Image 1 (tube, one colour):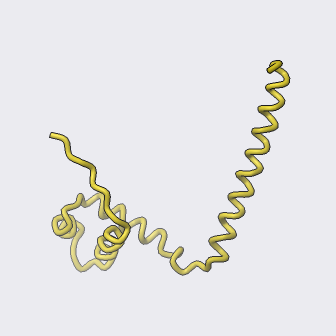
Image 2 (cartoon, rainbow, N blue to C red):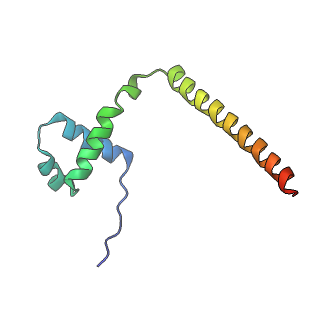
Length: 93
């Protein structure tokens, strides 16, 4: 018997993670209530707590991080393009 993989919405994940973070019920009780595995609830709770600071980060801080990453990736693409061109000339293609 195969079981179909369930995909949960971000809203559902947030609701369960917040319930776990509150600590009113144990993870086992929440697992039974929401029909989930306790490890999944613990993972969502950890993600929530690790990424909670991003909620309060300003948009300029988030944009700065992504623009720096994009610049690094563009530089890497340029480097790889130059290497491919050089190797194509050396190999006579």
